Image (cartoon, rainbow, N blue to C red):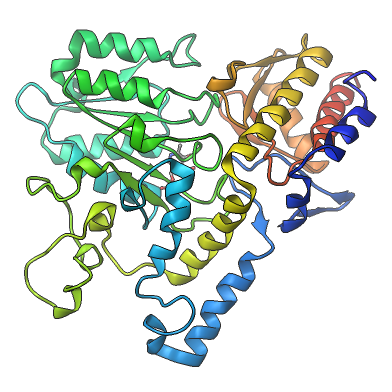
Length: 422
Ligand SMILES: Cc1ncc(COP(=O)(O)O)c(C=O)c1O
């Protein structure tokens, strides 16, 4: 059987041990039936269980009022602790190194306050030239906050071919100029290209240079295996509405390596929820930090948001990250195979092919150019094939192992083929 037939795709679905998880998600409808959804890199789909987890907390509020902070199955006071083991498992961290809180950009600022401590000539922040705009805005404003000259102190490493960032480019820069670098901030998965960066390698290079290093894992968490503790970066931040499927704008999280826990010299913007919980309600005037990442919490968190995240993490824990990654490599590999066998003349795939350098997403360019690429994207949306578009010319397609089928991938490639040959 040729691997370009629909029958072959269906055979792959029949043999998929994770196929049943698709039924645990709401797949949005489309006027011609059902959508083919490939935008999990932007907004993950809703787990069917999520509403019940939120309803349980609405019930607790209705039945118990303020007492729900201490009573019920999942009391609100320690609610964030019910997510700790799952987050640690997905990020390869110790439970004390992770916490669910705030939103990504807020957490990035909190981390920069603690880990960007310019001193003398060591006052530069290194990012990539195509960093996500919010990350760039955050580091620029932090430089300004320290009274530093942005032109002088912001280093934007140029991506190879203007699209991919080479780990070796980062290493080479740090070897040569490392004594001027205070902090390196890189993505775990680059949002436009889908390229996976080597967290362990970049961390080692930054630390050898005497700099701190953090990662934006917006596109990495729930997508690729992570080993944050062993890879030993200083901090990481993420959101939970992409591959983690916890809902639009929902509560984010961060990782702080355990070697920073209890460091009395660390500067931190503090709030009462970061205060040691055993004495928090004595309402004392001095801040006593909690152990681990919990110390960076500011406010009491949205329980409805945490409940949604707990629902989505529970799905991940049942499926297991190793099994999800195995299917993801097969599913995205299948997309690449179909695109390269069927549409090699028409498309360029920017995302690297090596397994360790990609996650779910493939970033695609139409050889015909930007205008035609955008037209294809717009038509795809109308016809129920949902990817997303990043200027100037990138179509991002992310088959997600929890809810996408091999048949979805086949239908998409068949659609693009028919569209381009019309
Ligand atoms: C790579 C990356 N970093 C940061 C952000 C900003 O996230 P937030 O709006 O949750 O702060 C996003 C949002 O899509 C992103 O994709």
